[in-house]
Image (tube, rainbow, N blue to C red):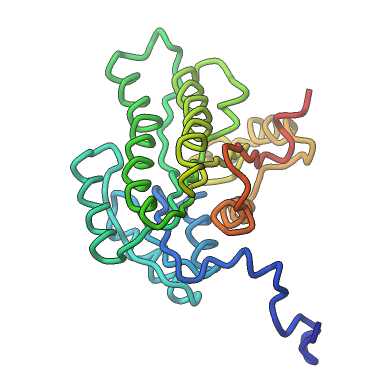
Length: 269
């Protein structure tokens, strides 16, 4: 293989690495205004996809689109609330009209309400299940409707290690994330024969804005860091490789899998 004389790097991309390219594809990443969703959006754009960034704050999304463009990628803002059924239908109609296709859906939106089950109201439980689980089913359905005519597509749900391990006072979140794990397996069986794959990424302890209250507390931060064999929190950008892999042709035979990205936390006794 030829190398660049100045950098020593490969002058051309090896054929096996081209399988990770997302050039020409359209990807929707929900909850991508910040945190892990933003890192996933950046990575998909960096791999060649046109990324549709989603959230409820249009101004934030516009700023992120500009950042991706400055880094050489392409992206658009698509602001809507994933729990608003009419808004979801309108968003997918817009995708069909403006892009004519959808190749990748990454579902990253989630809510959490850490309270004992006895203290949660009926409405609070219903809202959490709606945002964290029911909305994901509806998004997957709408995405599949665009992907099926192509005979190819990637459905990716960002779940959590809370779908496999649990802590007290977090029952509804854990139940919803377990449900998402079941969803990706069921959709893998349903859509696999039609050319679509369905997988999940289960993050562990990542130092994102959502966890700022914990990472800012030395004692609590150290407790969670020690729960991993690597003895540290994950950096948000460390989620990117898993997302690109599952979205790409390199994962063409990966279906119904939950890829855990947690530094080994779920295997530590």
